[in-house]
Every structure is written in structure tokens, then in C-alpha cells.
Amino acid sequence: MAPRNASENADYEGDRLGLDQVEALVAETNPSPKRPPRVIVMRNVILFIILHLSAVYSLFLLPKAMYATLLWTALMYYFAAMGITAGAHRLWSHRSYKGKLPLRIFLAICNCISFQNSIFEWARDHRAHHKFSETDADPHNAKRGFFFAHIGWLLVKKHPDVKEKGKMIDLSDLTNDPVVVFQDRHYKKLILLFCFILPTFVPVYFWGESFHIAFYIAAILRYTLVLNATWLVNSAAHMWGQRPYDERINPAENLGVAFCATGEGFHNYHHVFPHDYSTSEYGWHFNLTTMFIDTMYFLGQAYDRRKIPMDVIMKRKLRTGDGSRR
Ligand code: ST9
Ligand code: ZN
Ligand code: ZN
Image 1 (cartoon, rainbow, N blue to C red):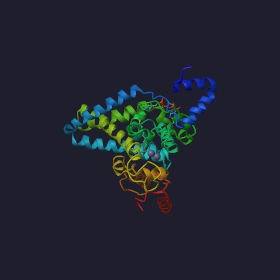
Image 2 (cartoon, rainbow, N blue to C red; image 1 turned 60 degrees about the vertical axis):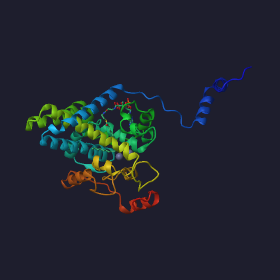
Image 3 (spheres, protein in one colour; image 1 turned 120 degrees about the horizontal axis):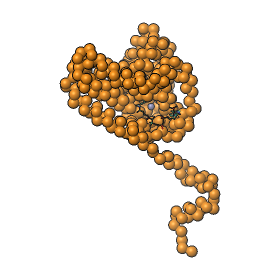
Image 4 (cartoon, rainbow, N blue to C red; image 1 turned 135 degrees about the vertical axis):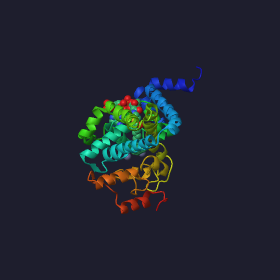
């Protein structure tokens, strides 16, 4: 009989061993089985290409915009950022402080300005990101590369592990918060109003800016910039920077990201101590969000801010840090 080649041999062995045994054999020889095929969501690909091309076009309109419109755009950036950082992230995902009803309503509105999925969906994905960090159950697993962690994860169907293991996460506090439930239920109408109509309407109505400029700069450009600043935390801050608290993990301290993301670039600290309301060892250092939460505290709207004691931080630095900040 003519000798069989390798694949023929495998088939032959397969017939004799039975399916279960073959699967066990494959798992043994290949301990990290291939990911299921990537299912690209073309609608998202097209929409994000249009959005980014429109943002580039908006840059050319900047010299023609009125100063008041530029200031308004900066204010919209700030509010959108607070809706993510002080709201979806530090309040609702991590419960690192508590907020009274007026503050929660305000932050839910700010969150609609940022249009990054409802608070419920954002917090669900973010809790999975921490619990299963840099595995297939992490929605934006940075081990799959910069592009995937930055935007790619929004262009494909989620890995089955995200949905499977995500079920293990308790979300009852979110479903028990009427502000979160209301925002999730009416999300589409709310983002249309707060992410696009309001930012465009104000400059046109109050100081006579052209509709075209107001729409492209205060809505489209600002939206795209806040999105990319947020995504940098998932991509750049999972790759580049110092690791003073735990050198064994990828999340890093990245000052550039902290600046763009209003205080969310101290990512090595944040992954080690996720319940610290400042997401950083420090207070107001490159951290507009901590300034905002502290202001809300002085106004009686925020309370029970959780801070990690200094001796615990120091001990951790000495035990697992990279020695860069002792
Ligand atoms: C956006 C979000 O940009 C950005 C988040 C970034 C997070 C950064 C974190 C960093 C720290 C904080 C820093 C802040 C800095 C801020 C700086 C500001 C200056 N667990 O999702 P689906 C199940 S959004 C459990 O559709 P597909 C569940 O049953 C941009 N279960 O998955 C769900 O059904 P339902 C605008 C889960 O079909 C079902 O699966 N938005 C979980 O694979 C289906 O879920 C967009 O572009 C889980 N974690 O589709 C939309 N996840 O929901 C983009 C899912 O009914 N998204 N399940 O309960 C999509 O189109 C889709 O989600 C998809 C995946 C195509 C990506
Ligand atoms: Zn992270
Ligand atoms: Zn977090």
C-alpha cells in the first residue's frame, strides 16, 4: 500500500478513534484552540468610516467657527466625558462612590451626549473587562492587538465567551436603579436629542452659528474625539506606560491618555484597585473627573467616596510593582 500523507493519516486515525477522542487529542496538541470565525458587522464598519471621514472634514471647518461655538464644543466634550468617567465608569460600573438622584439624572443625560451605548450595556461590558481582563471573555481583549482593543471590537460580533461568562456577573444594582432603566429603555430617542440635536441647536439658536458648522463641529467632531479618547484607554493604556503597582499585568500608567480621557489613564493603578473613586493614587493630578466628583461632594450630591489607604498602596508597590514609582 502506498504511504499516506499526514492529513490522510489524521483522517484515518480519526475514523478509528471516534469523535470524542479526536477532540481530546486536538485539545491536547493545541492547548489554545482557534477562535471562532470573526463575524464582521458591515453596518458598524460603514457607519464608523463615515463618522471618521466626517470628523476629518470638520477639522477644515474649525477656522470658520465662531469662538462661542468652539467654547461650546469644549463644554460638550467635558459633559460627555463626565457622563462616561464620573457616570458609567466610576459610579455605575465600579460603585466607587454614591450619587444622589439629581446627580444621577445629570450624569445619565451627560452619558447620552457621549453615545457609547446605554449605561447598562456599558457597565455590563466594563465589569466583564475587569473580571476577565485580557481573555476572550473581555469584550475588548487587548491581547488581540491595538486595533481590536481600540475600535475593532465594535465592528465584529462578540466572542461567545463574553456572552457566556458575562452571565456570571451580578447586574442587579443596575436593574434596580430607575435612572439606568429609564435611560436604557429610551436610549435611541435620548441620544438623538442629546448627542446630535442639542449640541447643534444651541450655537444656531443662541449666537447665530451656521447649522452646518454647529453640526459638524459640536456634534460630529466632538463625538468622534470623545470616542477615540475613551478607546485609547482600552488600547494605548493597555500597552504603553509604567507599571508601578503590578508589573505582571498589561494595563499601564499613561499620562497622555489621562489627559485626553479626563483622568482615566492611570490604568495600572485602576486594574489593581478598581474601587478607588479617583482611578489613581493621586487626587486632582491630570484628573478632571476627580475634580468633578469632589465638587459634587462639596455640593452634597456625591458621598461615600472610596479611597485606597496609602499604606496598602505602598505595600502593593513594593510587592508587585516595577519599581518605577517608589
Ligand atoms: C462605544 C463603547 O464606543 C466604548 C466603551 C469603552 C470602554 C472603555 C473602558 C475604559 C475605562 C474607562 C475610561 C473612560 C474614558 C472616557 C474618556 C472621555 C473623554 N455580558 O452587544 P451585543 C449578550 S459604543 C453578558 O449586541 P453582538 C446579551 O444577552 C459606540 N452578556 O453582541 C446581549 O443581549 P442584550 C456606539 C452579554 O450581537 C447579547 O449578548 N455604539 C454581554 O455580538 C447581544 O449583545 C456602537 O457603535 C456581556 N458583557 O454584537 C454599537 N455582551 O443586549 C456597537 C453581550 O439584549 N455595538 N451579551 O442583553 C454593537 O453594534 C454590538 O454590540 C456588536 C456586538 C456588533 C459590537
Ligand atoms: Zn482596562
Ligand atoms: Zn474600570
